[in-house]
Image (cartoon, rainbow, N blue to C red; front, side, top):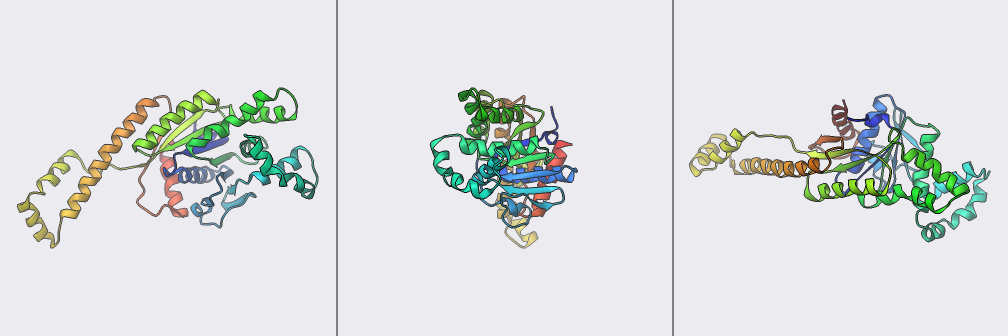
Length: 314
C-alpha cells in the first residue's frame, strides 16, 4: 500500500448505494480506534443507521463515545452553521444566531454549495483542531461525492478576497493534501458497482484534487470448490448416482448440488468483474473484504469487518 490508510487524518468513504459503504466506514473507524487512535466517525446522510453498527441509540451532532476512543456523530448542517458562527465569527450566544439560522434553508437552497461547505468545513475543522487522530466520514453516495468535495474549490475560485475565500482556502489545504485526506470508494464485485467505481475514479481525478486513497471491494466470495470438485458435483447429477447418494444420506441431494453450482457460478462471474476493476485502476490500492455470512448489523458484525480490514492493511 502506497500510504497507510489509517495514517491519514480524514477519510471520505463513498460508493454506490447498497455496496456496504456505511459498513466499511464503521469497520475502518473501529479498527483505527482499536489501534489506539482517537477516532471520529460521522454519518453525513442522516439516515440514522450508524448507531446500529455499534449497538447504540441514534447519534446526533454532538459526538458520542460508542467504544473506547471511538466517537460517532451525525452531520446536521444547521447545527454546523451555528457552531461556525459561534467559533469563527465569535457570536457569543446561540440565541442571537437563531434568526439567522432560520433563514438557513432559504440561503442554502439559493446558493448551491453552502450545505456542502458546512459539511466539509466541519469535518476539516476537526482535523485542523486535532480533536481526533482520524475522522472517518460515512459520506454521500458516489453520485454526489464529487460535488461535495469540489464545493470549496468552486467557491474559492469565485471569491477572490475576504472571509469566504480565507475559509475555503484552509479547507482546500486539508482536502488536497494526500498525506492527510483521501477518498475510499467501496465497490462490490458486480457489473454496476464496478462501472460506477471506475467512472467515479475518473471524475475525482478530473474535477477535484482529493486523493483516491483506496478501493475496498466488499462481499468477495471465497473459492469454496476447485475444478476437481466441480467435476465431481457434475458426475453426481446422473440419475443413478443421485439416487444412490440420496439413499445413503436419507434425503434429496439436488438442492445441495444446486447450491454448489450457484456458488461456483457466482464466484466465477464476480471474478470477471474484479478483473475489470483491477485492469481499469492499476494504480489504486485495493482491499478485499470477504462475504460475511451473518446479520449485517451490531458490534460483533462491525468487529468482523474491522478484523478483515486489519488483515488487508497489515
